[in-house]
Length: 326
Image (cartoon, rainbow, N blue to C red; front, side, top):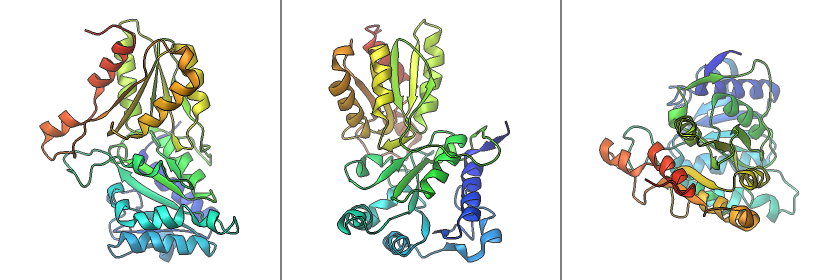
């Protein structure tokens, strides 16, 4: 199987879907002139002309226009430049896009995708480093996706574009240059289905996005100590595949939830609650969460590393649920 970058995989997804469906178009800031700040749109203008456009710096206008375009029969893909900026368009996302299908009694579809590069990325500081999936989990009507590899990025983006409901597509900035195997030809990765990235028997890690890789690194280290870790990659956060998670926890009897976002009010709380509700009698230890400390992401590399969740945090949590602290 060929190996390409995460960025190239999303580019292939866009090319294939724009060839497949002439109603698909994409727009955002600096995606024609610059090819996107992570190179994820390079080459699209040459093939698709005005179906890919640069727009003024107005997130409110970008997302509001996406809603109007979706309501009139097209499939817009709107690029947010940085996921942090969805806060500027929160009324459009939360009060309009998420609710229109319901408020119109199902007479309309809202087939749009908001691509949102997120996560901590080498001194991007407090306004460009956030993991904001927790902001939108509480909003009915939205699908939330977070790929962890080049292969899942392509398959999930294609599936998202074909959805008739709005999708927030979070793609971690540090994943763009990373390479991985991606199948030739067309394939779709189903939304709402988690993947068992690594089977194990002692503890379940439930995670997504960049933290899948960090969890895999920890699992390799702990294997040398005789600790067998099962890793569940959620891929779709909303709706998330609770069945796969619960089945894993019933087997391992322990669960650690890992994400890069702040622990307080983060998506890990929802996963932990579901595990406690549906698998309580199978648990041999409390469900633990690993995530960022409750601070804005600092510019200083030393402070950034302090605030961010890391492999040592994951190892400590696993040892704690296994009663092997210290």
